[in-house]
Figure 1 (cartoon, rainbow, N blue to C red):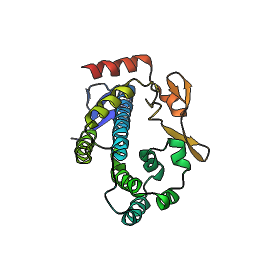
Figure 2 (cartoon, one colour):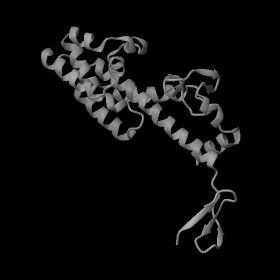
Figure 3 (tube, rainbow, N blue to C red):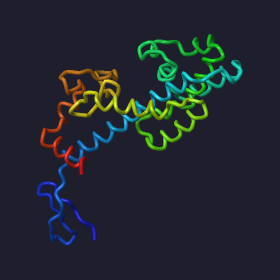
Figure 4 (cartoon, one colour):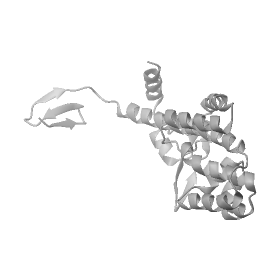
Amino acid sequence: MPTLRCYSHKHTLSANGSSGRSTQVDYDLERYKGFKKQVAGRKKAVARAQLVRAMVGHVGAKIPAELLREVVINLMNSDGDSSALLWLLGLDPKAAKAADFKKIIGKAKDVQLNQLLVAALLLGSVDGHRDDSKERSALLLFAKVLGLKTATAILAAQDERISKERACRGCGCTEETSCDFWNGDKRVACSWVEQDLCSNPDCKKYAPPAKVQASAKSAGNK
């Protein structure tokens, strides 16, 4: 029989009008736990990205340059993020965003083109929404093919480093996993306004009280 939930009094109402007690739901806590899960995914993706960067740097020249130029451009024409690709190649984030991708492709030598191809193939692995365990398994296998023997150590070191970063008490974003929001007609990256609060307007509104954070931490330790 279908039931209706009364959110004011936190009990359920059956279709025939009778009511019965149900388990109370702390929506602030559930939302905060959801935030933390998203943040954990982003942090794990950052660690994977650092491994991919090391893998790209380990690639030598294996495929002829003229074949690769066309392949890399075709891969990136399917809505690929060229700035992320260039960051994987070794550029810093600002330089990667400002760079002319096609100009770099035109001047790239054999080794760099091979690196770009591997970076393009692995670009999806740095997405924070991917299944971390599956992505790590695939990356470690690829790293073995490339002859990168330190892949497991790189992941472990990056996980430890990222876990120590300060995080926003609202959404949980960090220096490397910043959130973004609409500012007028532009999408902008957040910045710090307090030691543990970013500039995203939603974060101040939704930052959970200390007791919610404590409850989430307690639940996570069980």
